[in-house]
Length: 294
Ligand SMILES: Nc1nc2c(ncn2[C@@H]2O[C@H](COP(=O)(O)OP(=O)(O)O)[C@@H](O)[C@H]2O)c(=O)[nH]1
Ligand SMILES: [Mg+2]
Image (cartoon, rainbow, N blue to C red; front, top):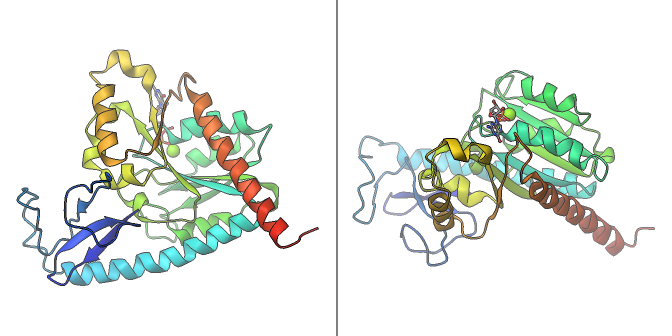
């Protein structure tokens, strides 16, 4: 996950969560991406033209506030993680731009997993219950979190909002919680909500260059679902160029190409999710065994 950092000279950068003490290059030797944050007070771009940041005079203060908000969010996210782990529930945070196909994919996912795992959904939307209604009709427990209702219309879910959703699910009856985040290619990647894994749904209609333009999101993902491949014959889309762009930003993500519309490739996604659920279950068993549970 990206993080804003303020340096003694006033420059501001966004760093990977585990990344520390590095130089200010565009990408580390291990492929980790670093991103110039728009809040930059100095805007040092190593000779690269990163645009004019000189008008942004409140950069340092803004970053301090952001760090405090994110720090508090991380604390609450750890609470969500502990709550879910205590119930033996695995959780996946599904993120994408609006319309990439999150709900369509979940509508295929819930029936496919139903016989093996009890799936709950925290459905994040700025407004309406349209997606929540679609998924509840499939028999899943669904907790709707409208960010416009009491959460200021946020463009992402944070740990507090997800907790509000989890509190409305019967956790004792679940094996896997899928969080459909608010459609946005930037903000959701900044907020840990207590998930075990992050999935990103990317649609080929979005263009090959998106991993380079939105590296924080693509870098944060454990799995990148490449959706809408049924449209390949109709688009001027270069799949190899996309794969290469993704590789630059995130060389380790699992990549699953599929069509939520036709179902092609969806089995690989179901298998990936099932593996998450099994891992969550066995982690809970191990912990319970360690405590000498009967
Ligand atoms: N052709 C095609 N359309 C899709 C696919 N997946 C989703 N869509 C369409 O894309 C639109 C947005 O999908 P939705 O699941 O609501 O996206 P979300 O905003 O990410 O939840 C809808 O019109 C879907 O029917 C796909 O694999 N192929
Ligand atoms: Mg949706």
